[in-house]
Image (cartoon, rainbow, N blue to C red):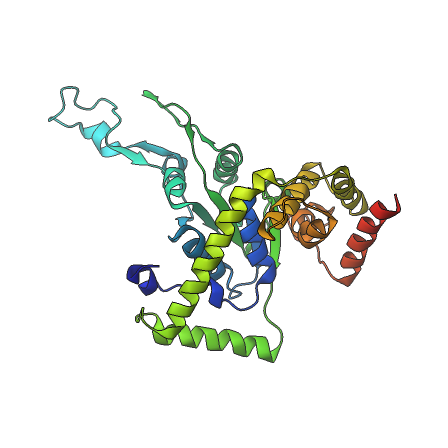
Length: 328
């Protein structure tokens, strides 16, 4: 990582304390190209973790979608000033042309590797759908008056975050995010102390790229980035058997999952977990580790748009569902 990167005020990913569920979801999403949504109260380091992950995995901060963004800012559009006022240096002054075409945020995300939607629950549903469709298909289609743009292939990770206290995200949009995790406050003294010590160490060294703290964590970040790259290359070759397919269906049945997207996501996430673990074959144990993030937001709820709780009882249900596969 360069000196310029070291000066960016983002805590190194390897220095982040806790956040196991979010970190696994980000890494699995990176490998299998699955969208991730982090839900949690303010001050729980959702944005910090996501930005740190982007800097580690993509060597750049994510392209961040601002509130109030319009579809031409997202997809790209003509420069209104040129269209209205023309350009006398051109023979067809005032006519639409490819330059200056304002590049959309999705094209920028294609270059940077990650698009981050903070406060996704406060965005217009139309904008969220445009982004989710493009991320899912990998095809960016721009339709503008007098503009003929061929569909463009784009490849970026999609990560969103939200504070449920500021309003829910419609269940239909929640379902479009493959993995959803709840980010909670650390509730014990040791973890809170470890978090504070990491932040203090970073504050002391953020402008000194030669500091032991930054050098140690930049090295750790580089090692993890290499591991993720290897896993991403391995992922298409990871196999699964009928037992794993049956296990996904059993989990969906046990938790009465709405729709059928959850089973597919579980299988994809299990294969990505296997790839990250260095295995060429996904099994039930890989599924056990990723199932919660794939199904939690797809369970029936009386409070639409909220995330149902998950505790020991749900862990026991998951284990029982997977055990039924062994019993036939």
